[in-house]
Image (cartoon, rainbow, N blue to C red):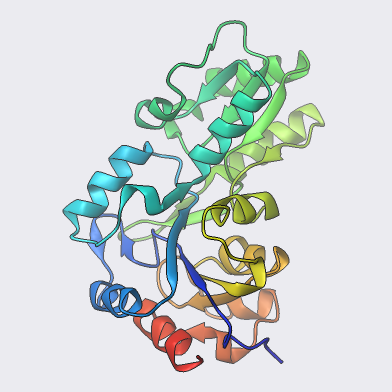
Length: 259
């Protein structure tokens, strides 16, 4: 039996696959977000995206006419920057040029860690081999996420996790994972909301990283059947059927009707 959503104070919303796919908003997502805004619930947008910096992501959301403020977005790149900076690390950045902007100002000379995000250009043999040798030289491996795959306009594509796992296998090292589904990511995302974990619900299309991660962090979770969702995903974490929604619009209705 699911815990009640009656006492919610905040809604965490995934972006890619939940509100939009690539540059195309999912039908009904604008209207649903506006309806959510009219409630007294706080809203935060949390994403595992590693392909673009925070500012680029924000501008892309603006181009899609989403009513979202820059301060409302919490990304796994932001969390990774905080971790690297707090430990005084010098990263070898396996990131796109855009994503690297979120690490501006940090020294990358004589790296003592490898930071890995979704950057296909870095997944070729020589770049992976450079990372291998750094890791064998006692550098830490920091995975911005370990997503298995993500949704493109016409298909699914391998996520960062496949390549992180390859380096883990080759080096006998376990990556420090920063983004969803890690508890610390969810707890960091709500630090400025003044809410306890059990007063928050996460809405997303990834049953493990979004929903399972939120539940393990003490939150509620609602899975939407858009984006990367595949038939039967809810059975992977024994998610009750009442916590599965057709899309973001249906998820918002579920949340508001439960209060």
